[in-house]
Length: 140
Image (cartoon, rainbow, N blue to C red; front, side, top):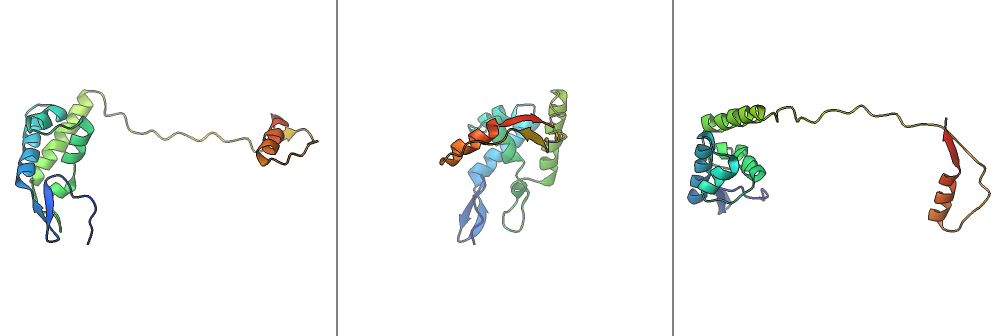
């Protein structure tokens, strides 16, 4: 049974996910460092992992770290929730909490137009299309 990419902190032995203790300890150190005031990148650096900010965030937001039917738990729910709470607090403090994607109202496309009468026919379909489009005089 293939489960795709094995998350950092785990390895597969005989078809079963087991904790890779050295990586799991690095993950715990990242959580501790971040909750202690370090940036995501610096917390990872202190734990001995060279990653960019977004990669560290994705690593720490991985729900498999809490344990599930396949993966054993590396961290507890309290630590996971404390990380999310602190991340959101920092996001708001930096003014980045309003960066949600805003829905944009679609602009209706014109549904009618006027065009001159076609007088030429080209064997190349691209040339024919270009010619036909050039005959459009205005949108109604």
